[in-house]
Length: 384
Ligand code: P1T
Image 1 (tube, rainbow, N blue to C red):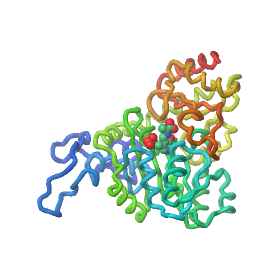
Image 2: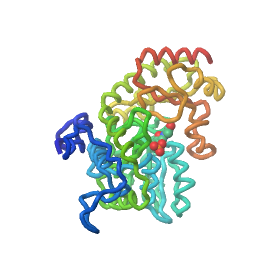
Image 3: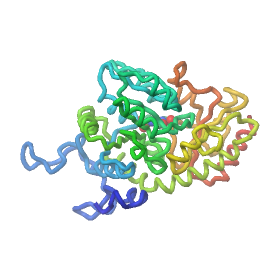
């Protein structure tokens, strides 16, 4: 490897880890190994690759690069964020219990509450802002505490270090979905988490042109089961998707700086605006997780949520009033997106402990010219 994981900086690892020039031709950029299978010298013998569900060199490069960014020994790539989650959750068995943070992506809630439960796994939601409460009310069947931080869509911040301590005290594992922060802003393994999940569809891919998922961990036993399941279940990304994700992640650092700077401009517009009752952003002094975010994140990131003073209909209408912010699901791409979580990304959580307020609007602030984004949102708010 041309990079040294221990000493090279984040941006150097993003550009070089797992991405040496290709050995046969010298291709500087990792090729798209668009093949399903590999010639073998003899039955039962192969040169490292036998079939592309099991392994593919473009995927190997992506797995090494992403593991290096999370400071992990192991990385496993999947066809989507939910495919990564599903494969990890298949390592649990009937009777095992999951504690899910009480704010999370609607698809994660749906997977845990409607799919994984079919195999006899139990779950409950918990407010993880108070680690002592989790400790005091611990369920002995709990094997995994599963959380996002910052959460989707309420931007709640949970204390990774404190929650890892509680989980470990009871012999359970802590899983952190690091999608909203990205490894540039937060590295949960270094704070005690056992496993990191990503939807690489978001900031890591960064260009809204590919769907993918990723697991990073230093847990040798757990990863050997997850790698077994990656092949046995088969929810793997294709080589073209791995190539696009690799291309995206090289610029993660510079993009995140710009996402954060633009988000801060938007937060300034929203704070104190008469049409806005609450601004949810971990970089805002007065946000309940501000101090924890200062400690565990490099910067507060590019996601901003807010509640509209005039309520549900006005919030919905606002999402159709913008010119530059596109009304769409997803996040983390270079372009700015706006959405109504209650009706869109989190509709599956209606009536559950993860239900979101119906006056909530979520922004994924892109890397366009900041002043243009402020003007666009300001005009849209004026139209309410
Ligand atoms: O969409 P997919 O790549 O399968 O990833 C699922 C997922 C996992 N974790 C978090 C925190 C996520 O936000 C997502 C996907 N979220 C959206 C599509 C969204 O608009 O919120």
